[in-house]
Image (cartoon, rainbow, N blue to C red; front, side):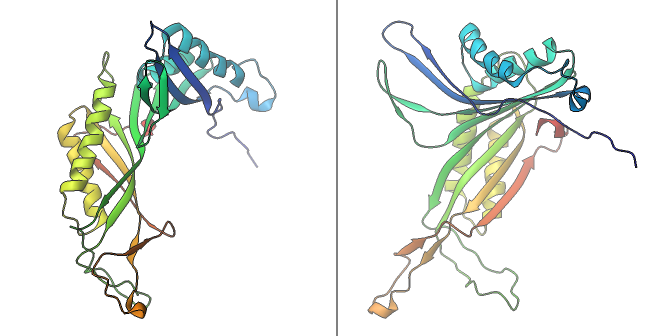
Length: 285
């Protein structure tokens, strides 16, 4: 029986990084969780030869040293800097991925901050010897419409108990990732992030929904229409169910006014919306 090593990678996960810029009385704060993964000619390492292995502790130290040397601006830019460094400087490494989660803070004063609510900004950078790919994203964007949502006409079988409705609450917690069509010189990472977020929200608000699938497609389409720099958008929308409470035992009507919000189980709707001419890039994901 022949045995061979399959795909493998290694790295340092969830490096916590806080960078303060003390340029005068007004300080700037950047708070990231950075994960590094490397792959390449590492078969020898799996047989006990570590001569081609860059320790994960070194990867962690590189994150901190780069934060000091180059500063921490947009997550995508910092991720590209790190990923290209590992591929360019390590002979055994031909593939690097850096995943970044930004933890936002709201400014309270020149040097005071409060942890912000709302969505978390994400970035994933993949560098090979031939190409660089950037996927940006967000998580934790909670949206709700109290009306303009229906759900009916679906398949019914012997196990179906869900009643059809022509007026319901539609709520979800958006997880979205979008792939850049190309990585040019100094892209407007921040402007794009805010533009995509606004497009997703606008589509959710303005779509009269007959299903969460329809809403997903409308949201992805709106992001591509508004942001020409994107090639595709991937969305995961959990259906945060709100069910009407039966108030009849108390002699009360419930005309779509009192609900119970449940956290599980929940429907999970996932999908990709992409341009017809978008080149495939499976290595970006």
